[in-house]
Structures are given as C-alpha cells and as structure tokens.
Image 1 (cartoon, rainbow, N blue to C red):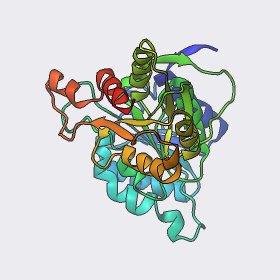
Image 2: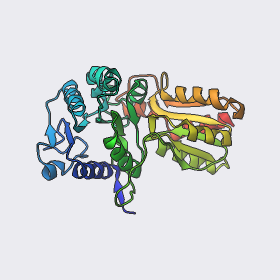
Image 3: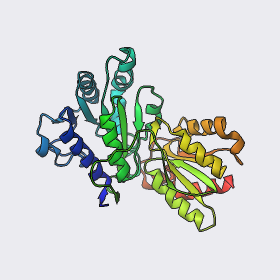
Length: 323
C-alpha cells in the first residue's frame, strides 16, 4: 500500500466522494482559492469548480446554518470550520438544529452533513486556538463524533461519514496532518463507531484517540522495555462509542487507563471509566485511572504548553500505579 499523509488521505476521501455523488459539496472559510488553512482541500476547486467548493464569509453560524438547510433539502454538504475553536460560535446551529432536526421531524427529514474541524494543542496558538472539544459534542445526542488518528482511518472514516444520513462532527488534530501511513488503494470505507486495537498487549489497556494514539504507542514501547505489555485501543469515535472492543480488552488485561488531550474534568475518559466499572468491575485488578489535559486555559509559553498536554512520562507513571 502507498504511504501518504493524513492531509492527503482526507483530500482523497472528499475528492472520491464528490466524483461518486454530485450532491456532495464543500463550503467554509478559505476552502477554495486558498485550498484550506491546512491545505486539506488542495486542488478541489480546480477539479470541481466554485459551485461545489464554496468560499464563505467569516461566519461560522452562517456556514453551519447553510449546510444544515442544504442537507435537509437533499444535498450532502461538507462544512469545514477553520478550527474547532470557532465551532463555539456555531454551537446554537450545531446543537439546536443540526443534531435534533431529524428527531424533531419524526425521522422524516435527514441531515447528512459532515462538519470537519481541526483542533488540538501543541503549536503555541494560545488559549483560544488549542481546544479539544470532543467531549462537548459527545454530550449532544444526535451527533456522530468521529476522531481519526492514522491516514488510513482518516480516509475510510471520512468516506463513511459523507455517506452517513446522520450529522457527523469529524474532528482532526492539527498535529497529525503531516503524519504518513499506509492507505489502501481503491474503494474502501471504515464503519463509524468501531474501535481499533493499534497494539496488542496483556498487562494494561490504554484507551485513547487522535494524536494521543501516537503518544500511547510510544509509551507502550517504553513500557515493553521494562517487561510491561500495553494494549492500545484507538476508539476512533465517541458516538457511537464501541465499548465492546474496550471491554474485551479490559477483561483480558484487567487494568485500564484512559488517555485524552481534552481537559480531564468532564472529559470523555470519565464516561469510558464509568462504563468499564459498570460492565467489567469483576474483571478489574485495579481502579480505572485517567490521564488528560491540565484543567487550565492552554498556555502560549512552549514549556507550559508541554506541561498541559499528556506525554509519555505521565502515561508510563500512571501505568506503573496500576501495576
């Protein structure tokens, strides 16, 4: 299989789906002429024209509102938000319209809308541009929440999201766009809401997603040098949440650690930990532990920023507490 970047994998997914279905179109700030803030929409305007790759004003509520209306009337929009931080401006549209329209119309109206948004920290962008808001969208019934990590997953999941008749928040970490990985050639999709075991192990389960998958894999390598084999489960989605895969792993390893970049308080790790305690308590040899982002606005200072984001050292230390 060829190796391509995550950015290229996402671009391929959109291009292939736009070729396959004329109802698919893209809208957002700078997605056309500028080819996206992170160049994910590179070449799509030249290929599909300005009627299907639409540059919008700087108005997130308007972008999501237009996309919602278009989806309700038969199109399949991909709305790109320049950064997930700006989704807060569109939260009324996302939570009060996009997420609930199908339910409020008794299933007679579908909202096949994908909202793509880059996020995450680590680039010294300060407190207003470093959010990991996955738990907020997880807390909203009616939204599917997809968070890929590797290029193959990014492509397969985005294609499935575009074909889905439910609205999908597709959250991409800015730190993984340039990472390369093998991506199958030809037509393929990945079902939404199915976790993936990125590394097998028998001593502890590390439950994670997005860029933290890479950090957990590095921690697992360090632990293996000390004779501790960690299994790394990449959730890939928070709604639907694949607890079957998680519980199967935890019942085998008997120990679990959730690792997320979002703030620890109110993070998705608490929900996963609670479900493990509810459904696999008798299998545990230790309480479920969590690692998450510091409960502070993200610092601009590079040293402080690093301290606010989970790293290998913290993960290894927590695993040793479990053991």
